[in-house]
Length: 159
Ligand code: HEM
Image (cartoon, rainbow, N blue to C red; front, side, top):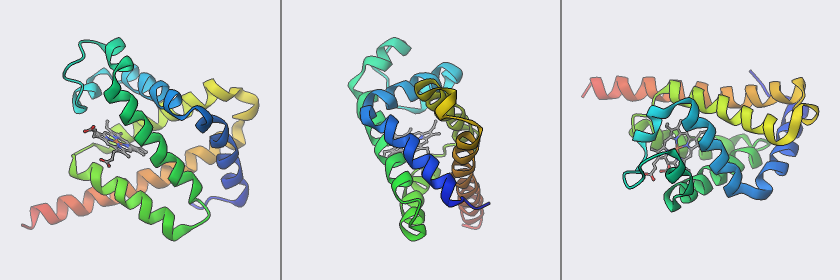
């Protein structure tokens, strides 16, 4: 699966609109993610927060949302540079494989991310072509994650 020049342009144009208010968009991303998947909260260090409202206001989420948005921005910025793209993605993937994050959890983040983009930008900007571009790009992350998880479990079982 290859991203066309038009796909990359659509992704970069739409991301430019969302990253203007990066931390707020990141918090919104996690609100969607946790509302759809309440169990995932336990994976994060939100021990001091008693419910989702507290989590959404916490400095821990603010910091984390900022990091995730910066990472997504680097992925988007490097779409035209396959080496930097893979290097950057590789780092994120390795740190998440080591945390035992499931492929399904990454798949569910795709739902939250595409939902966020549609909500923020509307269906005129997030038209079918642009949705497809985002879907293809995120599937590159998912494919890479799947392979990395398989390699990790192979190398752990041969120890
Ligand atoms: C494209 C998707 C994602 C991106 C770009 C991303 C990015 C990041 C970044 C940049 C960090 C901090 C640096 C690091 O430790 O690597 C991080 C930490 C973390 N991520 Fe992700 N992440 C993604 C998906 C997920 C998913 C699906 C989960 C699981 C539900 C997850 C769970 C975590 C956890 C538990 C931490 C550590 C939080 C902490 O200890 O403060 N991430 N992520």
